[in-house]
Image (cartoon, rainbow, N blue to C red; front, side):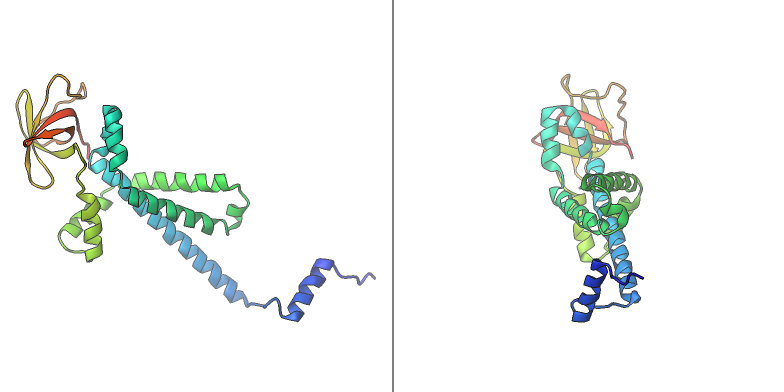
Length: 232
């Protein structure tokens, strides 16, 4: 009978005997796994919240229409994005990737695959959440002072941002060359259109429509470069 021990097994036994390796009970590993799983879920939910809020802001402000107005629209779009929230989302995605790599389905796959999978999940999930009433209801709750000060500041800081040359509001009156709309801040704004104003061919703006206007303000009148209706 061959009693020769495997070198690796002997190395482990020697390490245990020398005190270099500490034996841990099973509950320790179970607790560590449970905390890692909870942390992964919390980070994922945080990312979904941030990404959905970013998409909600961009859509609700009408900013997602800006690129359709050419290079100047793209410039406004990129400059007006909530970059702080985007950077926070990227940081949390990196943290989530580090957590996922601890699981067998994560570390056995190339880094590009796992990162790509996470990005797809958070973008799709964020888009779905942003199209629900979740953020709009939270915004109204914070507006009624039914939330902690931080939450109120968060929603009002980003939810009521004003973008240069970008305006939104509800149409209250129309003529052949002008529209009057009420802004979210309660201001009455006159929109002047001309033959250069870009308007969708099927557009039929009426009182009560919520619109996005990309234009140049001058003495309380905005000369519209482009207009579109914002769908709810």
